Image 1 (cartoon, helix red, strand yellow):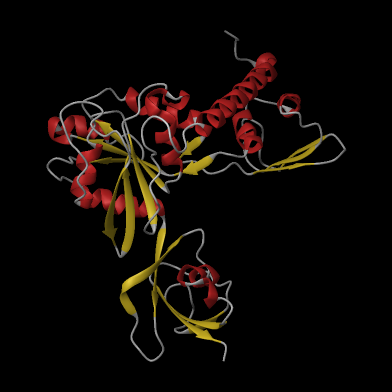
Image 2: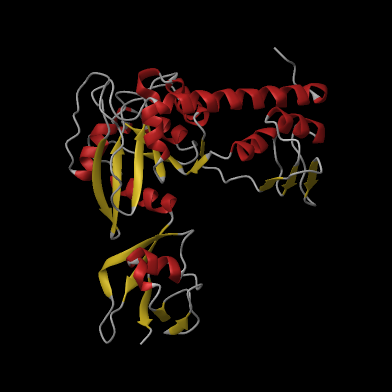
Amino acid sequence: RTQKNKATNAHLGLLKAKLAKLRAQIVTEGTKGSGGGGGGGGFEVSKTGDARVGFVGFPSVGKSTLLNKMTGQESEVAAYEFTTLTCVPGIFYHKGAKIQLLDLPGIIEGAKDGKGRGKQVISTAMSCSLILIVLDVMKPIIHKRKIEYELEGFGMRLNKQPPAINFAKKEKGGIALSVAPGYHLKDCDEETITQVLKEYRIMNAQVRINCNATIDDLIDVVEGNRKYVPALYVMNKIDQITIEELDIIAEVPHHVPICAHHEWNLDGLADMIWKYMELLRIYTKPKGQIPDYTAPVILPAQKNTIEDFCLRIHKSLLAQFKVALVWGQSVKHNPQRCGKDHKLMDEDVVQIIKKV
């Protein structure tokens, strides 16, 4: 075991890079064979609705019961493990948004290496805009860490933002590294970064670091296939514990306590799902009529311009676009004439005026 100190930082960074490379190799080789035919049907379900939420957890924690209660979908429920053997989809509606829920089979330790069809489960989870990690409150809290380890080993980063590192390969000139003022490198130095890039056979590159970066952050940027996704820890079966134990569970960040069987706090879970997915409701207004509040256009918070709004309705609308009239929080006066780059906010009302 290598001791961790300043003298061994470069060596540890190199080992981390080698591990990341080998993991990426295993993942790509594993997912090549997990496509069409072969043992057991495919997992992937066609994407419908405005967003997609995946249930991930160990067997028999109540994922199928939760799906059944939230959507009315019939996912098989029984008192033994591995009742669900394939991906069961369901739809639930919240604040006018159509959200697809995926009940994935229980994962086991070693799932990231392919055990128990784990790679197919995690690959499907990668396509979700939010992950619900369902935990049984009667089981040890170490289960939470084990699931995080499996998902992170596959390239998922839970409740994290991509590191602010600009990385670009060059033809010549060696490795040019710069750190923005006010930031520093954590547990690594320039020599470590150079060695890690050489491990990836990158001899010429421009690296600009705009955050307090670790060597793991740099490896994530170089690999380029990481999925940054919000996650909620759903603490199920709270009917079996005391109030004092519930107070201890409340210290876990990003958690929601529920009881799927008795339908306790499912409304609170739906509100947390909405909050973590950061969706906006934009209402349409036909000319000379009142706004249609029954069917909002749902946009992710990162794609909230009028151009994105037009593309969400139909791509041909953008070619005919002249100007938009907007009512709501994003404008100073109602209505306001706005161009394609105007950023919308939740519950704005938009009327598109086309070219004559």
